Length: 379
Image (cartoon, rainbow, N blue to C red):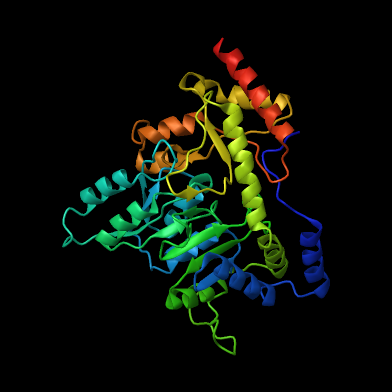
């Protein structure tokens, strides 16, 4: 089976985790601190707060802004559902923005149009408390345009950079544009800690508050166990951090290899399908390699996925059309054509296998089988 994804686990990763397990010191401690410091240095930010996963990172980021029930958060309509779920869990309302057809990221023009509707005059009181752009599949969103809009309205930005550790735009790393920025270390990401997440920020006050929130509300700067706020147990373990430290040593090698494989896919596929596109000046980590099937084959995507599986090739859809999930469709009465670009992309996206140790022969097999199926289905 050519798997959809495989984490890059080597002997040094296993050794790093084994040493921590044998030490008996397993909960958040010195390894977590070291991992945070190394991530902050890699990103070029002042603070990194390690947590249990990216969903908890997003949740804490919103809580640190004191989000209330009347508040609105702007998010793309095409993302993993946790991007919107954390807003609901804070009691606020996610307001969806359609995406661009090339990069699958939040469309700045649509964002601007929505804000003009919500805030026709800067003197108007607004309940829009944050904007959460997502770097979908590792492709960097148009952050200069998004930040210009956010700054004009004085709205904080929280980057959902779950897929984009190491991606850059104009030599600036994804996850360093916003007030707070959240990363994932799920096994399908560039580097992994199994589960795990990081919140990156340059704001000292927020960093202190986030460290307290993730650990039962304990003051992170106190020599005693002093509870200063009600908090959560969103800690990262020591063995997760040890794996992250080991993985981070080879992140550039992993990214370079995945980019080379992505470019090879694009070459092999030629013009048969729409292949991933990067905006000018960007370099994607290619967390996933997502193509678009021809429009006439959208209704046959599940059949294509099954046929590829029968050939020993694991594929899946791109990601989720959040407004049309049962939860959000029923609560907010969304329907098709409310987000026309997302309607199209969500119906036609197909994720092909991509991981560091994939071979060119594996890629040739994937493309040959895919193209034979497409030819058969359109005959």
